[in-house]
Image (cartoon, rainbow, N blue to C red):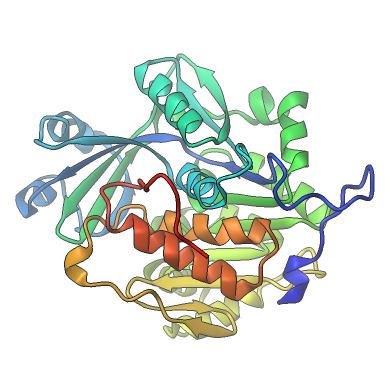
Length: 357
């Protein structure tokens, strides 16, 4: 595992980068404003939703967004998987501000202004591509008990353009400054060419590229683009459902999560200086990390308020320690801590400071 945590040096100066330098962590994805509300089974059935799932909104979900904002106790939070994880990593690290950089596309509207304000409050260095052809994306989090069904209306997030944002010199310089990179699989539906450009830079410079399987539909319907990126992936995240779907789509002929992790580790790899690490969470069951399993933090089930964002929080905690070159065990311990905090709160929110040592 030590090969994953090789010291990263700047090619220009050959000086090791400070673990705590600004812009050391780079994320790119779909910035969404989360709209969270408690709903009932009839609401889920009305829109054909599973209690615990993530889907992209279709025409028949348009009325859902209009209906959910009228529910009592609606909450709005800055969301989107990758942005959540970068935000959590910054919270775990605290200082300096702007360790995390985030790229994504928003609309020139009120929701976009809210997202910008939320990023500033979280001390994330967000550089959004702003356009006015589509409104800022939203994600309805339909909560029933411990479950959450996510319906994402990407809207503006779908409009990210490599040549209009990532390729700009000032933006690409921010990409080059980082040493750890994280992009959720969701972004494959938007700009696989942007992911590939970043992934190649990471591999060529022996830095660390992390990716998430994100949702079953990514492995099913965006398989070709996912497998173009996979050779560049140094750390692969997912949950047990996503892992099982990926294994089925790849013909692994096993349903054992630990074996699926090993099979993922052995997929072709571009940068052979780093052995791929695969981390699969399983809710309240042990987290599988290629070579071993790690028990999660015990929690009274009655203390769980909202599991929305638990996976993003796990990744954020993990990344916070990866940036400072901690061993794998510490990365996972931080991931478990962050997820444990988030599931006891509504949305992907957190107290002012972490209590992680």
